[in-house]
Image (spheres, rainbow, N blue to C red):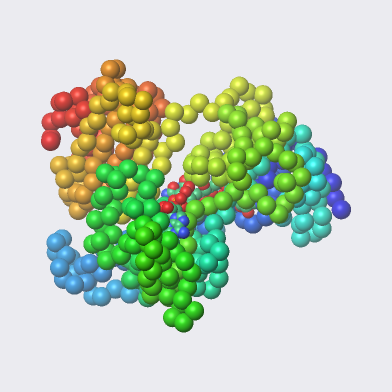
Length: 465
Ligand code: FAD
Ligand code: NAD
């Protein structure tokens, strides 16, 4: 048994943990990071990156299939394409490999000691790690819990050969003929759309009465239209109730009680994620919880002195960039800098077709409490660049205070508009007013011009609508 001591111990090397460790190392703090699986965590290995790789491959394939019938408006024709999903998956795994190696390199460069193995708490400042070469004890002055999250399993549909979590869906080596997706949230729709483009017949079952219930209905309408165009069936207001023992079909029950069966060679269950808090001695610490989540304050401190928690294990929004921002902040706090969570907004991007971006308050949220607001919505049907990309369904919407025009929120839905999230986030973080956005020269022809036009429209000065 080996023993080491350090100033900071980070448990989990996902986006929260690895960023925290790198920043701590850069600040000259003696840092150790322990990871049970691969550096990069959920995001790099089975989440953000692999899903976006699959989505890209599916988009390419669908575009080629569209041209194969000879009906392409662009005048392109190709012979019927085919896809070898095992090669697609190998390509995706190559990207993951490059990124995880990159994270290892960055940790090394920042002088962070990486220990491979599952950590288990002995007490609030000591963990044991079962490594390949035996038990390693790590004692630390400060501990950062960054163990992330795991997919929620439904008791009637346990994960197995044909019932898949997102991890299983991202590793499929052939395209299932029929795919039932339980949950029309982020994962269900991002992957459901991708598999429909790859050739699966997809049915999405959602408990709420509309898709993507976390976004407002105006924002999700273009996605609903695209689902219909792709032939994806949506069964709304219904819950998955298990599989038929005979046919293997998915059984769903509508809110009012009717039952139906949905053919499904594979079932993807994507009904949310839960914090990774069980099975590694965390209960010994008796930290304050918010349900299963670890409760933290605005510096990510837990109820135990010298123990921080960051990322998915602390709850919503379970997004990689939130985890990273928390990780960077905690490293600086440990280094003695004065930091607390002072972000005005965390952008959310849903990589559906079309994509959705939301930063800050929606119209309804902004109006809460009787606040007067100005709203400007500019459609991509009036944006030249969107037309040249055949992406006219969608819009940019700006929400601002009516009295001083301070921008409270920006949302958009449209083809390939995830990159606009940077401009939206910057506008909010810098406290932009409608006049700031309207007065900024936006390059032509770009989809970003729709942001300027939306601000102008809110001011009653739109030029192109
Ligand atoms: P994780 O990334 O979950 O990392 C935690 C790490 O801790 C894991 O590597 C785990 O092995 C390790 N660990 C756990 N317990 C222990 C232990 N006891 N000892 C040692 N190590 C341990 N977010 C976005 O912002 N954009 C996206 O496009 C996006 N797409 C996604 C797509 C999918 C399919 C999924 C599943 C998620 C997606 N997410 C996306 C969410 C994103 O992956 C998470 O928000 C992010 O990974 C959280 O980072 P984290 O550091 O908190 O935890
Ligand atoms: P989610 O919370 O986005 O969606 C889950 C959906 O399942 C909800 O709409 C819910 O109403 C529905 N649901 C729950 N129980 C059900 C049941 N029994 N039958 C039918 N429907 C049911 O969860 P997710 O899609 O699993 O994603 C998990 C998390 O991962 C997200 O919340 C997000 O934080 C993260 N993520 C982010 C991105 C991104 O940023 N682009 C992509 C993927 C995942």
